[in-house]
Image 1: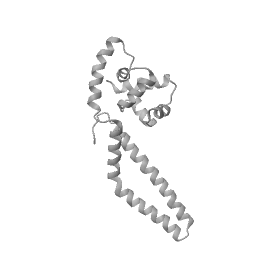
Image 2: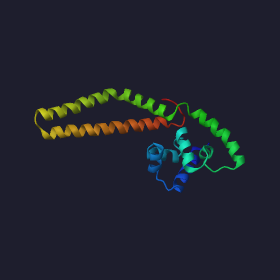
Image 3: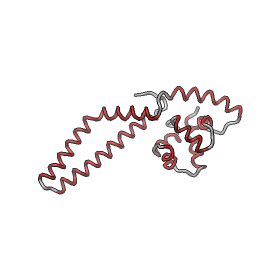
Image 4: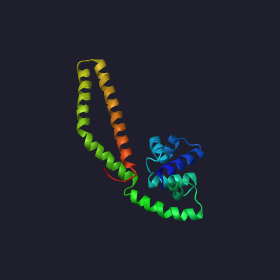
Length: 170
């Protein structure tokens, strides 16, 4: 199984259906970055994603993993190899991997999030007590930006780890 060839085939199938990476990601419940990583051969799609793509594109999972349409002889030869490699790399379901890495990230960053939360709440409360509109608004803006940063940083970490082709838990 060649991840780059698999990725090129996924991109070809997606383009045949006239879907963008973002549209395919929405259908499969992943981000467009994840689809891009599959198409560049960086990550192997999860079993759930492979099954959904097989149904969507009208090809077998074996053909997706092989990176091409297969004849009868090729299909039999590729099936065993693809199955062997897939089983070796997929110890957990995608949801289990994502939950694991999300909890891990939160545990590793809880102290920093608490410190930033206290600082932001302090700025916001100081603005209210001192009747300083600018400080109050700054506190709200910092809260929103902090939340967005946390979510983006966490999900980037989760996706990078959950889609690691080795299947290893770091």
